[in-house]
Image (cartoon, rainbow over all chains, first blue to last red; front, side, top):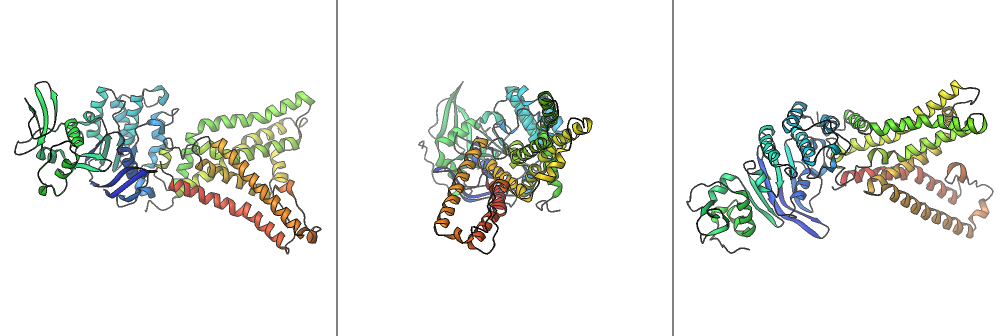
Length: 290
Length: 263
């Protein structure tokens, strides 16, 4: 569905993405994680056709996104982090009324159902809604387009805790089976139990693009009284240390996204080797943080 | 059906969408336009005891038609190239050409038509209701005296230049457009004056001075009548460039900007 080959991007002289290669498949909810400024938003924009790669290629449904052909645009929806794109004097229902008809699979019933679940007053102007309410309205529209590729930039930003829980449930319930969803976030806990596979991005490379199953096969997340010598990462938690280490027949463990992210940030090269397609040939790990 | 093929249906949808989005602006504009001839009429009655002259009303109609024609890109599509606010426009499933055509149709037809309907209509209503105070219709005056190929071409050129500036500048569009116009016009004037001075110093005008008619006031551009002289041919080509080639260049550049704009 989405194929990137040695994609590079720069703003002027500042290099943001460098030789990024990855594939995204339909029917999955990808979590795009990365530190601030590594280019998550830029990557989404390149996929959405809003930016053109400096080098390399990006193809979506076999098309160049930057051509912005109707056949491409009707299958993609990009939800930006900031809601400036909806004019303040519009209500979200008005926004849906003027934009919905252009999306061939737009489902107004679905839109209304999501608004109801989110308890958003669809007829109120955006100026009269809180940021969280407006965001929920925008999410409702994005899901109602039934786009084959849904790109969401920090969708949980601005949502309160109950709304974040609701957001996860609504995504699971309303995203179509064949839709490829790519959610960028730096608040990994917001998306726990929702995203799978996980993509961890660094401006130099995709450090990881792996399913939770693959991650738990290769890494072990466990509570230890003391920090084991082979731990990639550890953090003190009540009752000991939460440690991330290579899974040498330690069995399955529940992936802790925050610990995974921190471990990856500290051992970029090793993680990259571990989750590379030819990971079986990986050599002995180096555990010194990079 | 190939969804990438140009579809008039989508163009229609885009125009309809622009109306829906700007319905409040259009409603207010219609009210102001309808109120203009009434205010004009009342002020003239109070000042002189009779309604405004046909000349006066015709010129007012011409001015507003020109103003709306030229400024319509700012009114309807000022957000198209905004890095954040322009996203719904650029991501809307329609081709860039369809969007471009819809924008052009809206700017060329819709707003001038509104002026006709509301300002011209208001004037016609007043003339019909109070024939003893004012006579003649501004719309008829406009068509009989103001609509010339020349004025239309100049207005069209200006509108396309504004359309282009609207897509080129992201912020302070109006200010930057005015500044650009002033700079370009100054450069053009310098070029014309220099060229004329040089050609005059070379003696070109001596030979043809009796055959050349320069009409700056009416057309706004040089109208030079004499086909055989190289200077006259150059003048004709320059005019052709200004009123035919330049608008096309602006249109192509605007389309190109829309196609390649990064957000």
